[in-house]
Image (cartoon, rainbow, N blue to C red; front, side, top):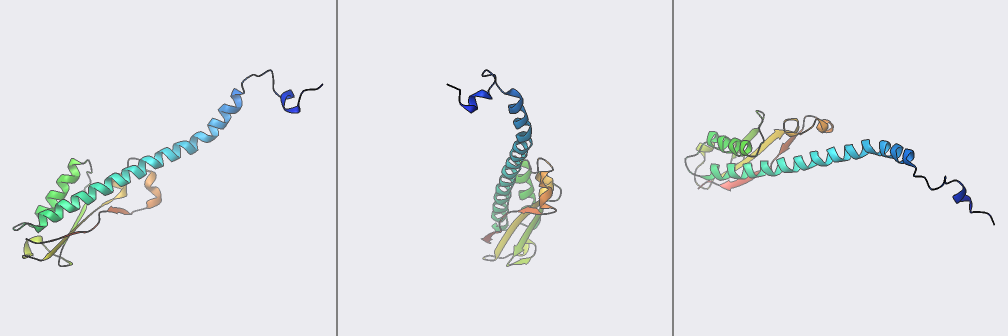
Length: 147
């Protein structure tokens, strides 16, 4: 009786370490790329949430009486700094009744909107955001009525 063909090619049950090492060497760059991508997407989501929170706090500040756009910008940059988003290119936009104006000019029941944006290159942990170009992460527009 002869042994089946697949058992003849095995060399006395020795592990095939060389093949495993070669497969791992081929798979490692793909795994590394996926891991870095997951970190960057996670960072993008984190920064987006921080920007939304900063815009909400900025709109709350803008809705209060006797506050100006400078007060709103100080509030927003303070929140971003506390959360580790330090960028000199943070853009805070304040709209009063859908027109860019100083929040101090808003009167009671005017609609005050705040949005915050920051370039992706300033908040990325690695330089892997190359595929996004010069885009910016932006919060949603938060709107409140002036009190």
